[in-house]
Length: 486
Image 1 (tube, one colour):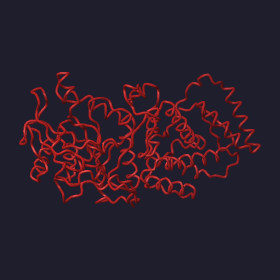
Image 2 (cartoon, rainbow, N blue to C red; image 1 turned 60 degrees about the vertical axis):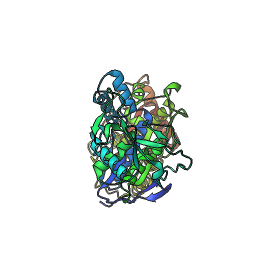
Image 3 (cartoon, helix red, strand yellow; image 1 turned 180 degrees about the vertical axis):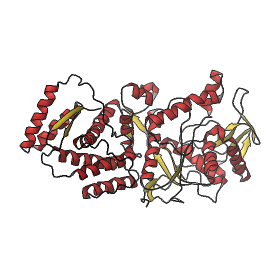
Image 4 (cartoon, rainbow, N blue to C red; image 1 turned 30 degrees about the vertical axis):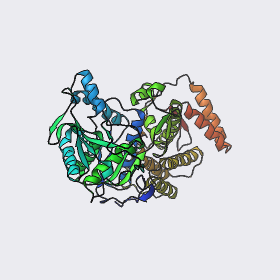
């Protein structure tokens, strides 16, 4: 399969660049995953969905992937909570790790090849620290080992942060610290008390610093640098800058990462999400409000990954309406031409022959190749919806059944990316207060409008019924059937 040329906005260069993996048959990707001490909030979820969209896009583009996302199961918060609850770190993190994978499954996120845990990679971290010490970039102080920023001339190259005003010898022991404050960061932390989780190693009794973990796990899995590294924009500094410094300092002759991709922040009702503001949501919170997982997925992937996404329950409702419009169009094709048993099971091998579908397919793939431009990709979906509905609304449509089969195949192909469309026959649901007589009356009005070639009125009536959850299908014999949408 020929690969599609992708262009990505590389954070390191600040430019949109052609994607050039070291091996097109073995693209390596590492993504920063969850710190498993609680449920992931929807800002985290958005970044995980971004990783899924990247994966699905590259697979559609013909690439073979070797992808990883780490599980941070040791850090300050985890240790504090495990001590507070008088249980081991492993006992504390196990249910939160399981909850993370449940969230991914709920949102139809594809499984990656690797999910390394920090606690299972300690030897690799110790080895990296020893390499940095031998290269003169790490020093010990009171049992802790720190990375010396002043001895690494390229510090700030990734995040573009200014290090000229930093004070020599000022250190950070915490895993997380204030943005834009540049100090030597901890690689290995000395055990503070007997109740604190620690490992007995050649560099002392203690545990790794947060920044060290990802560098070591990448080395453990891939043996060298990687093609793509992703994460939320909040991780650019200090976390990714420190990753870059550690790995490049340890292995200066190797390129650590070819392309850095960062997902923008998620806002809630225009503000930063926080528990104190009452606008903090986990996936479970949204599900409890009655929203379907596929609607949540659709909403969180609808904006470009480099654009802030303003989340609100009202906007989520708008996403449901938009998704229902697409879904009802798919059902119209399936019902109108009795194609329920002819849905393609996969997109590979589908060759589009109809020119307007060929163009939409090209536009769709070009949108993905252009730095994962999901809004443009979605535009092709709604253009297809318009074409299909306009054709089905015409009483004497000249479109052959082959046209609708290709449209259906294209929806299947697009769903490889979006993973939100349904192709099974929906179960009938109650009318929720809408009378059958009223529905039949609207169908007659629509039929009359079509006879008078008032297609705008016919379309308006159909959309009104769709908004009330009523799906219409025009048969080849000229009849119109209806059913309650799923």
